[in-house]
Structure formats: C-alpha cells, structure tokens
Amino acid sequence: MKRFLLAVAAMALLTGQAWAQAKMTIATGVDPAFSQFYVAKEAGIFTKNGLDVSINTGPSGSAMVPFLINDQINAAYGSDLAGVINHNIDPKIVAVADGTALVRWESVVGRNVTDLVQLKGKKIGVAKGTGAEIFWAGVLKKYNLNPDDYTVIDIEAPEMVAALERGDIDAFAVWEPWPSRAVLSIKGAKVLTTNEGIVQNRNFIYMNRGWIEKNQDTATRFIRALCEANDLINSDRPAATKMVARFLNMPLALATELMPKLEYDMYLTQESLGAIKDSESLLLQRGKMKTPLDYTGYVYTDLLKAVRPDAVKITDVTPR
View 1 (cartoon, rainbow, N blue to C red):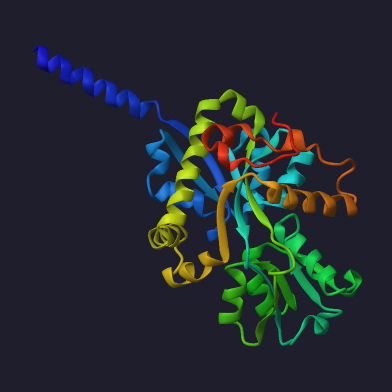
View 2: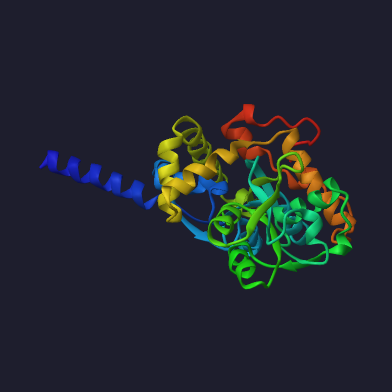
C-alpha cells in the first residue's frame, strides 16, 4: 500500500507538471525567415521549456504584429518596420530580440522587362508596413530613381505572384519565397535586383511589455526556447531545414535553397539598432511619425539578458 501511495503521488506530481505548462499564442508569417518559431515547435523545444505554444500564421510576419495590442497574441515575429509602426500606435509593443538578418532575401521581380529603367511608369507591388517598403525605398535611393515615376500598389506578399501573372502589376519588391516562385512559374519573370548591397532588413521578436511584466517567468522561458532553437538551426542545418519544410508544407529542396540566404541571430546589437533607425527615418520622412522614437522604451533588453547576457551588445540604449 505504501508503494502504491508513493506511485500515486509521483503520478500526481507528473500530471501537475503537465497542467502547469504555460500556454502561449504566437504569430508570424510563412517563410523560413521566421524559422526559430517553427523549429522550437517542431523539435519540442517549447515543450521542454514548459510551454504549450500555438502558432498562428498570416500573409506576413508584419501583418501579425498588431495582434499584440490588447494581448490578442503573446509574441510576434516580423520586420523591423512593423515593430516601429506598431510601437507608435501602442508604446507597450517592444522589440525583445533581433532574430534574422535578411542577407540575400529580397528581390525586385519584373515581367517582360530587362532592367529597373524599363519599369518607369509601371505598377510595382509593395507590401506596405513591411520590410519590403524599406527595401523598395533603398532601391530607389541606390539607383537614383524618382519615386514619382512608379505607381506603388499595396499588396500582400502571397498575392503578388498571381497579381504579376494576371498583369495587375508589372513588378514587385518582396522577400522569399515569392521571387523564386514567380521566376519558376511565370514566363518572362526576372529578378532585376536583390537587396544585397542595398539594404539588409532584420526581423525582430516582439512582445507586449504589459504581458511580459505580468508573466516574467513564462516570457523568459519563451526567449530561452527561441535561443535553443536558434542554436539548433546553426548547429544542425539539415535537421532544422526539414523541420521548417514540414511546418510550412514547403518542398524540402526549396527550403534548402532559401535558408542559406538568411542569418539566424537572436541578439540585440548596434546592427539591430541600425535597422530600427532606418525604419524610424523612413516613417519620419513620410510623416507617419510625429516625434523621434524613444529607444529606451522600445528596445527591451531584459529578457534576452536574462537568458544570453553575451547576446546583448547595445551600447547606447539604457536598459528599461
């Protein structure tokens, strides 16, 4: 009987641990630039850290960031520009980690044109409020092009390939996998330029400061899980690539081709700040921000410092 009672107590303890798993809902887009979310889920890393995580996906990571307002979700993964835009709406939305550098990730793809000059007077698809908007602005600056010579059509990334094929737009500026899919599937589609040497956007992990402060332990375990997923991506790329392909229902060959175009980081550095400042500059120039960004309120270093102190290398932003 004593052994039986001990066994029951042990079972109750294990069951209690299962019940104690913290539930989270997180959200992002559907491409390998957000791989830490997918790998942490597929590899069981969230579960290992005591988290029961549901991942919602949308047309882009940036489109999911606004759901942090009023705690509709607990974390989002999106572009540098999306974070600044939404922090401007709700100051509680903060950047907690720089997750991905988009090294060779964005392209301008045109149909039946040979170069950017031939796009003059034509319609260009750009997902506004995302890193693609910064990329397109960088293209104009790099090649000294007049923005007024182009008609920019606001269109979500997953719709661009079909829009180009229908002739609704003549070109688009966007991230992978859409450029590769357009070139493979549409006759006359061609990459006119990539982001390399023009701009290097970054994707950040965003959370709601109010939620973090009420759920500090859960938030810390979440960041720890993402750091562990990042380690797996960089130490065993073939295994991680299979997980990403499985989660996205993407052909393994395509995922294998795309992931080397990215750098997986999970840090906060001066380069991270540079990407944020580019976003701030664009919004100020276009009158979408009335005052400069309060970096101390926006860049939340505490979580990452608690997990990976060496990953926080920002020198000119005071921790909250």
